[in-house]
Amino acid sequence: MDEEFLDRVMGEVEGVGKVDEFTGQLWRRWRNLRNGNVPRPMQLGLFRSDYLVHAPGGGEPASLKQVEFNTISSSFGALSECSASLHRYLYKSTQYYAVSPHLKEVNFPVNNTTAGLAEGLAEAHKAYGVPNARILFVVQEGERNVFDQRWLEYELLEKHGIHVVRQTLHQLGESATIDPLTRILQIMPPSGLLSDGSTSVEISTVYFRAGYTPTDYPTPAYYDTRYLLESSRAIQCPSIQLQLAGGKKVQQVLTSPGVLEHFLSDAARWGADAFTSAELQELRSSWMEMWGLDEDVPGAAGAAGECSGVCKARERSAKLVLKPQREGGGNNVYKEAIPTFLDSLPVKEREAWIAMELIAAPQGLGNYLVRAGSGTEGAVKTEVISELGIFGWALFGGPDKQVKEKEVGWLVRTKGKDSNEGGVAAGFSVLDSVFLVDD
Ligand code: ADP
Ligand code: MG
Image (cartoon, rainbow, N blue to C red; front, side, top):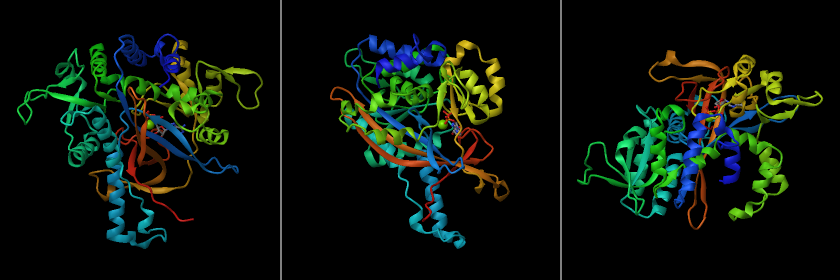
């Protein structure tokens, strides 16, 4: 949340916002919020950190490497819990025909992600302090992830007695108002009336399951709606600032020498223990090499002198992925597509892209990928790669600067080994779950 750092990396004067319209639009709204001296309420993050197993061979032991860190619309927590339950149910009903000695109930770990994520939202609601306010889910037009989101809504109502309203940014452009004195955010329900007869509801927490991609903002007015929501006293999940902090460029800059150390060796600022150099090293070892395409970087192994980020990306393209400042899948450029892509990339747009070394997932693992509605014939037997996501939430900021945080569960997505992308909703992978194997 370091403002000077985020301005430098993501801002429109020095950073990615200069060349990337979407990042620039968001950053400008955040700057206007700061210039307007609006008191900043607490913020909530529902996070998911994604990992692949890296097994390059050649004597290097296999380890987990981070793919990316998500700070907005981290999805599939609830559905991952369902798939874990499905696998446990199949164990109970069939024991999987005892095909493996590892098939024991204790090896199917429980996954309570839904309760955990809902707890984060409920903590924010409680911190806001108005019990009959509601939590607003900002969703996409024709939302397909509704079947993941509804579980959170049911959990909030059943366990915490908190009501949810769902609206798109388009609807909110009409329905959201802020009281200029109290800065309370009020929403009119689309039907005009709530079940208790009132015509508007106060919002405690704004939970974005939209707003992470430029297509969610077809005109500048949509960014202004985002600004309006954030200029209220409602807790944002995430704030624009926290969304920017999750940018892929930020993840790359953190790997530069000294940057992580700068933030974590001074952990006392957040009331945490200082990180030892061994801990910093351990954290760093979970990252692949990354660099900016606009940077001067040390040359490829064995080559003398400096080579630009683009030149190095060309040399190593077979083992690289290029990523722009986007979320939601389908935006990255992989391996053999890289050289042609670099030929067509205007020089000034290089700043918006990072290069990342590919994680070498273990080979030779087989499984069945099952598609809904296609029956037994629809189960494809193939070589697969599994991606692990770890969910957590953090409630922080506000006047007393306290941080409350918790790790809450996991997601496994499995895809065919030849698919570069990883998204389930995007159509690349299927839901899976963790199965522990005794040593
Ligand atoms: P998005 O924001 O689109 O989800 P990601 O960084 O998660 O972007 O990339 C999408 C998918 O591409 C990931 O889920 C993963 O399967 C694959 N991927 C991304 N980075 C790497 C990498 N360094 N090595 C191997 N696969 C990767
Ligand atoms: Mg991803």
